[in-house]
Length: 419
Image 1: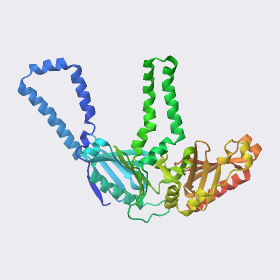
Image 2 (image 1 turned 60 degrees about the vertical axis):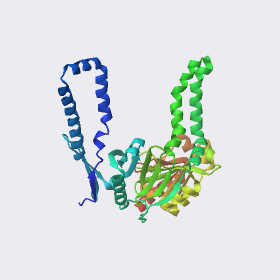
Image 3 (image 1 turned 180 degrees about the horizontal axis):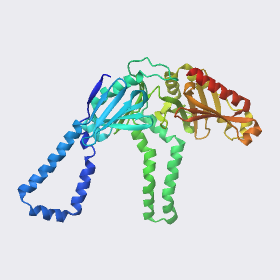
Image 4 (image 1 turned 90 degrees about the horizontal axis):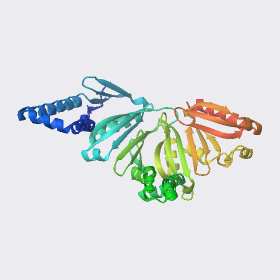
């Protein structure tokens, strides 16, 4: 195996947690400050200076040695990472199992000119911190090229060699989308009412302090979400999609094509007049990762076409509703649909607050089950459960019993054929 990219982390790396040691030492000194002052006055000045210089020299030597012993090396099949002076540790990240390679730049790191590279493997994340911006760009690009070379069933081969922008979210559109999300606004309003309730019952000004407990969650759901998602852009890479966002702390996330298990398209009720949607990608071992906090339906259609092709778009746009007697099993029967095309399965659910569409390749199906409760049996209905490889389960709810059996058999057959 020949190394393609190798190097050491940024020299500031050993000091990234120095604040914890500094805070501990400072607390000890401040707690017994008179005793420390009295002891220092009893020592000769030259000895005090020598002790301080010795401690500083030991700290510098540890930092330098730690930096020299921390390195990375990217080969044709894995990324090797080694660190440690006394206890030497080596880690190996298999490129075939790599799910994402993300770059994060907190505000302070941006001022220094460094960033963190986060690698996600089999549901776990590890950080390479810190890298210079140039190091991170070179290593990230090499990882994307290596990731693009791996192919798995269920995803079409990617041939593009250059990056190309796909979409961006304007600050105004993002702010309006947050305001029109009924679930967010209802939760924020309920929290504010609960926070104001003690004041309304007692009319004591001090009771307004109860608002302090709810302002934090309300801030996170509204203004902080806008700051966090500000400047959202989606770019097509050789190995997947790259998302860039953040007003103060910028982040770059890579969503790998071959690790995508399903596409989730959500549409809150107040977004329907504007035909806006939220797009997420489900990956093995992870919660659904956001691809676009808000986008037009045409942009979502274009992204699905770019990821899976025209057959996936056809499956997403031709829902097959549940039978009419399903209304005796659930009040939301009109929102339940299922469709299967050549190589793709699509499920619809949700009616009031948000409508959710799950689209997945048939090759990602790991298991198919047929569920039938006593009331479903009386109505001649059944539910088909489709399990994905480490991703969410898709359920075709309250279908005709014979149709459900046919759906289960077709899903098994198409899964084997696609593989």
